[in-house]
Image (cartoon, rainbow, N blue to C red):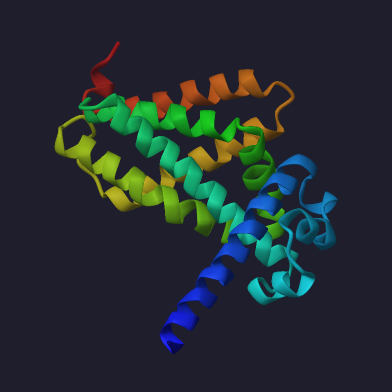
Length: 207
């Protein structure tokens, strides 16, 4: 009986946490971190202020949970797109992943939460760590597949992945702050794809 009661309590606690994250995600996306108060969040979630502080230290801690949820959604969008593509050569998959990443970052909620508010609220290092935790492994896997297929010159894949994910993150930030985001995204996509093509063992032989 004690275990059953504990399980029910855990389920209620997780349900409360999910309601808070869902409500905060919507509000942070619409009004930005600074434009939303904790009282608004708890009212939207239908929970008490005490419930919020039982789950999260403060508004910033709640924002971190929201940001992780959004980052996971971006990663899922890229992986599900790759599954839809089916069997393609590794370089085509890398190019598609770059395009999908920048397209996902164009979503207003992703842009506001991850790119505009994320670095300031989380802190630069925590923001980078979050991006790396979901994207670095995917990128390393794609690069290793391309190296194994001979499409990229043999080289250490871990530092290469760090260099490229840094470029991806900077491009996403650049696009989010651009006066013409659509044009900036198109330009950055072309530049990133040129960088990938330049890793080919045959790149120097092209006219």
